[in-house]
Amino acid sequence: MAHFCERVANFSGVMAEYAVFPQGIVFPLPEELPLDFGAFLEPVSVAVHVLDRAQLKTGDSVIITGGGPIGLLILQLAIKSGAAKVLVSEPVAEKRAMAKQLGADVVVDPLKDNLLDAANKLTGGRGFNVCIEATGIPALARQLILLAEGCGTVVWVGTYPSGSDAPVPLDYMYSKELSIHSVRLAPYSFARSSRNAAQTGS
Image (cartoon, rainbow, N blue to C red):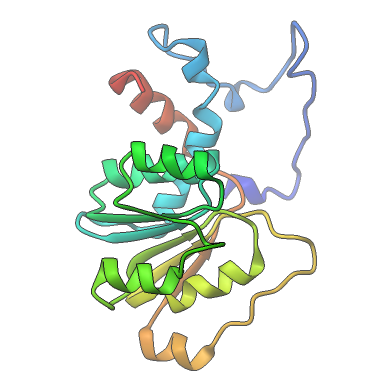
């Protein structure tokens, strides 16, 4: 649990020509990996950690609220990890188009479309095995609980405003045996992300 170290040291200078860091937190890029690909490894490592927390299994159905960089990276890794059905909810048309291009089965405009109806249609009314909230909107953090299938997993990865909360319907949680996780950083994921990128070239 390195990301909960009680003696965290902060470092700066990453925009400088030279910077000094402890060896244990530096990951050399594979020679075959272009720098523009390497620039994505930090957010990719977050997406990897999200799927670790979600314990996604082959054949799972997945909903992702938020089609920003993290949401779209989670989408790609979820498909690569065996997700059978993926719905992405995103209000920006260009991001919805990108999600569709990257393999989402269904994309929804939450400002115009009924997310619950779309979710029920895709899952036959069962709900999703894995629900991932990547917008930072507290109301969506709660809504995803209600879109989870029995024994489903909800992962909150958005950065929420300080002091915000999402009331949890305890009876619903009890009846569905749901699990809720949150993601703050991406410990132990960077090296795996780097190896995967080097092997696949993406």
